[in-house]
Length: 307
Ligand code: 0X9
Ligand code: ZN
Image (cartoon, rainbow, N blue to C red; front, side):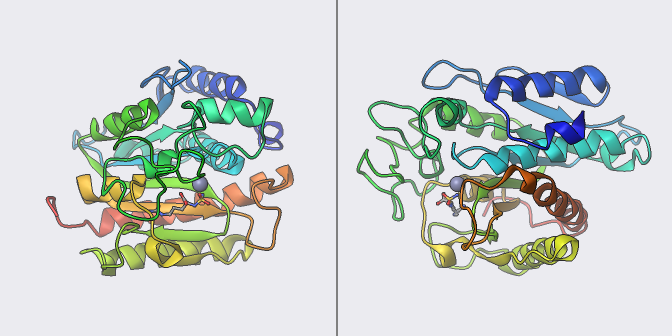
């Protein structure tokens, strides 16, 4: 069933059902959160946490993953589902990872937009706020509106009327901040095959640039080792400046390892319309790199906040 599932992309209600099935199959590992908040159109934003037994009694480090902030970037949702699936399927053979770590998933940050890409416009990016959507990855409350975002509502990078104006941004930001032990977070997007580290809003190097670079370079190297796919590791601003992004918010709020990964294809490929046969290989290389990264993050703690 798993092989069939990852052979294609799926609509929102099917993805919700898949997470509910995963929870039913692995009730001791998966907690399904049907609603961490509502969207503009009244849909629920769901989440899941995955962890094993607490064998040591120690507080577990927490890792946060999200996908489908941008509605048309379908591979980002599939990849997050693959990570969830690998974690639960690997538990029986080796419980050590889940017994020592908690993983948090928001697979579909933008369910309204995602639904719209299935029903109406495959290349829709933003949420569905009237009249023409807000770019949720310009709406976070971090240096909001300070460059690399647009005040024009018709722009694909429209920042919204105010910082965290959108219910989706508010919900996922509050959900993120509710976890006391976060050490790393990844926001999955497509496309271009990039591993992007803070900052997005300024060319100034982040205070943890040395470790952030080691982490990002290691992710890219691990991806390369699986299927020989080239990903470029760089600060976000080197791609282009952005403000109000999730990764800057995460890094500034909590001083954790914070990455935006742009998945397949590369610049010469099918863009957002990545063929469904690419779901499995893309997910496999990302799974390997996430496992490496989790180990790196645990072994190389960043200084405690505040920045
Ligand atoms: O522009 C974006 O939001 C991301 N690219 S996409 O093509 N998926 O829209 C890149 C954002 C990179 N910057 C930060 N994460 N700060
Ligand atoms: Zn994106």
